[in-house]
Structures are given as C-alpha cells and as structure tokens.
Amino acid sequence: MRRTFPLFLLLSVLAQAQNTDGDQLFGSPGIRIIELDFAEPAFFDSLTAYFGQDINMPATLTVDGVAHQLVGVQFKGNSSYNGPGDKKPFKIDINAYDDANRVDGEKKFVLNNGFKDPSFLREKLALDLMNANGINAPRCTYAKLYLNGNYWGLYMLVEAVDKTFLDQRFDDNEGNLFKGDPIGDLKWYGPAPTGYYNRYELHTNEAANDWSDLIHAVDVVNNTPASAFADSIHARFKTQSLLRAWAANNLLVNLDSYLGSGHNYYLYHDSVSTEWRWVNWDVNEAFGNFQMNMSVAQLRNMPLDHIGGSPGTRPLYERILGDPQLRSEYIAELCDLVRLGIDTVAVRIKADSLRAVIDQAVLTDTHKFYTYQQFNLNREQDLTLGQFTIPGVLSFLRARVNYLDDALTTAGCITAIADAPMASALSVWPVPADDVLRFSGTTPVRMEIFDTEGRMVSSSQELRNSWELTVGHLTPGLYLVTLRDRAGTLIAQRRVPIVH
Image (cartoon, rainbow, N blue to C red; front, side, top):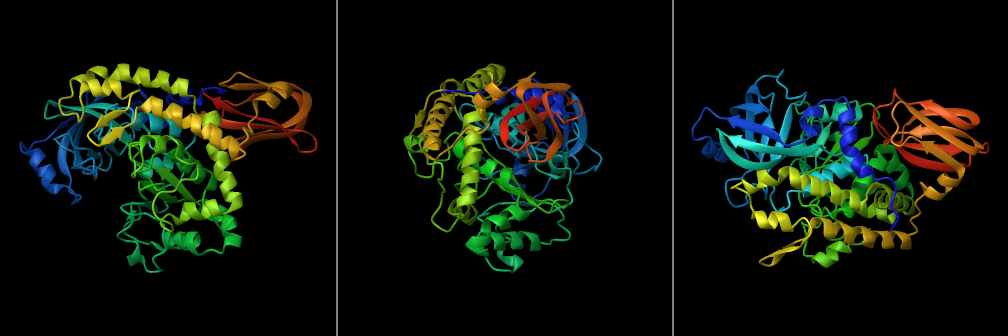
C-alpha cells in the first residue's frame, strides 16, 4: 500500500520546535520523574474518602528534581479508578494553593494508570497521532510516580484541557469550555439549563454559569431543518476540526468517545471567532479496546460511518451523515488521515522505541494491572483474558488501515493531495522546511499556504515558475501548500511540515 511522508514521525521534532508552555514537560525525551509527598501518613485513605467530592489534598510535587510546594491532589476517573488494586489515576492541580505556581507553564495535569492497556502504548500513540495531524487533543508523555518515596508505577502524564490549553491552541481562553461528561450526547432536552446540568460540566466562567450558548448549539444540532443544516453547522462549528477528530476516533476505533459511549470530549466556544471547537479526550481504550459488544474482527472492520448507541442518541453525527455535503467532508477527512496522516511502519518503529524506553519502569511496576509478559505480547498479539480479548495494538492498526483503505476507495475517496500531479507539475524542497521553502516547475502558478485550521497564512498572486519563500516566521507545524494557474485551477497541493 502506498504511503507518503510519515507525518507521524514528525511529532517529536515539531514538539521540540514549538516554544510553548509544557514543551519540556511533554516534549523532552525519556520518562518524567514525579514525586508526591504528603504530610499526612494516611494520605491514601484520605484520597479514597475524598474521591468524587472535588476536594484536594495538599502535597509537595517534585518533577525531575524540581520541587513545587503545596499542590492539590485528587484521585480521578470512572472505570480506571474502580480497577483492582491501589494504582489509582490522579489529577494534579498545581496552582490550587498558589495561583502563581506552575510546572513548565502548566497549571494542571493528570496521571493515568494504564487501565485496560497491557501494552502501555494506546494513550501515548493515539494522542501523538492526533497532535501530529492537527487534531485538538492533549499532549502525553510517561512518568514514574513516587508516593512518599515509594515507587507507585508507570503512568501516562497527560496535559489538562484548561485555560492554558485553550490559549495555546486557539489564542483565546475567555469563552465557555464544556466537557461532554457524564452523558454528553448532544440531544435536545429543552431550553432550560437544568436539562443539561447533569449531562455536561462547565469548566470555565463557572461564576457566570451561563449555559445559553451550549443550549443554542444543541438546538441547532437537533432542530435545524435539513435544508439549512450544513450551513448552520459550518457557521457555528470549526467544522474541519470537528470532522477530523471524529475521523481519528473512527480510524483508531476509540469508542469510549462521542462516537460510541457518547462522552469523553470537550466543546470550547471561542470568544473571538464565536465558533465551537472540538477537543478529543481520554483515549486510553483506543485501538479497539472499548468494544461495545463487538468482536475484535468486527472492530477491525468497523464501518467508516459507524455510530454507537441506538438511533437518535448521537444526533450530531447522525445528522452529519444524513447530509450529503457534510458526509463527503467527513469522508475526506478520514481519507486524508488514512492515506496521508498515518504510516503503519512508522507507528511500529515508534512503538518499539517507546517500549524500549519504558521497559524497566514497567518491569519494576508492582502495581500494574497486567504481567510483564502481557506487556511484551500485547504490542502485537491479542490477549484473551477470560471472556474478554484485548487487541494487539500494532496488528489491530494494520488490519484497520487495510480495511479502511478499501472502504474509502469504495466510498470514492481520492487522495486529493495528489502525489502524481505534484511530481509532474512541481518540486517542493526541503521537506520538512526550516526557514526557506523552495518550489520549481514548468507552469506559472500562484501560491497559497494554509495552516491546519484552514487559515491562509501566506499567499502571492504573482504567477511564477519558481519560488523561494521565507517561512521562518510561521509557527512550526503542518501546512497545506496549494498552487493554482492563471484561471484559478488547482494544479497541485502538498502538506509540508515546517520546523525551526
């Protein structure tokens, strides 16, 4: 199967090139060392007693040898909290007691415990893949956790979706941020806010407690006439990022999401653009591990238009698939991810590298949910434990990509970022680009460059056969370069990563 430049491998380069909060915490190689020291000897019993009450316990947090006094600590999670043993997931509120307290610019992060993942790879690979392909999702790295000096195990250190996250991703953090938990199905429950209080969580502007924008968005999703639905969605949502997040969950069969269970996402109402922005969250059961009564074979071959739940329970996705224009846009995003955004060989190389990094931390983790042998096997092999089968991560992904490649061809997917026209009409180098991007060809063209949000960041209306463009001012990331002739016809386009 043909594959293009392995964008997935660029993530570590791009992460290191960006100068934003959290770069050292999430982008540095290796494993972070996280130490939590509680003054109270019976801290574990107290954390257990406080679970679900949003009560912090004070602790000294030390990250890679740097101490941060008095942070807030809580247990978190649903099924991951209720797993057997003492390896619980944590929520760390760095500025709970001192608003100026930060760790590499971050105010919060979570520590996930590897529940239902013998491989310790699912969450890291899925979030890296999403971030590498311009999908709104938190960053992730590994951490060895010590509680009052005792090694508690290997955890996934995951970025919080909070105002810091919003400011980094969207250059705005003043709008309402809603979490689609515990039942964020986006169904219409009437105009009163009380119909939504037990289904969603408001995570910003809590004092104002204004839910009118969410209710209006849900009204649009459910009650807009079919003839106006596509225009209404485009006017109110950042549609490409919404569809791309959905496509990633389908590709990775991440069904503990709106696609399946109907939760585990954030919606942010951008106060500048007034658009709603979708953020994926909690992907630890990606690669077919949240199964919704399907076999592993069914999960590998899950249709590209699959929606979990009974009819009427996922109105946003159902109505999008029912609209020819929006359906084709969703298929195009999935096509782009499968054909251009992922290289299964690159993922295997990355997984093998990660496994080598975390091997000793897993071996010595006496609180882990699975054996060391199962850790080694589940990277490739399915594990049958009682009546439940946990798919092998890499074998599942290969089968999934092969299935979708065929299904997308049947659906009319064309890799419109076409390699053949690009090769014959234009040369682009270097890839990835640093400060200068060069083009040459036989046809006079004009150039436009777009970022992953669809914003034009550079253009020239002059027709030329060759270009040498300065791109050092652009933020490192993935860009779409388009070339058009005098009549405006698209001659070629290509995704080009820019690093500095």
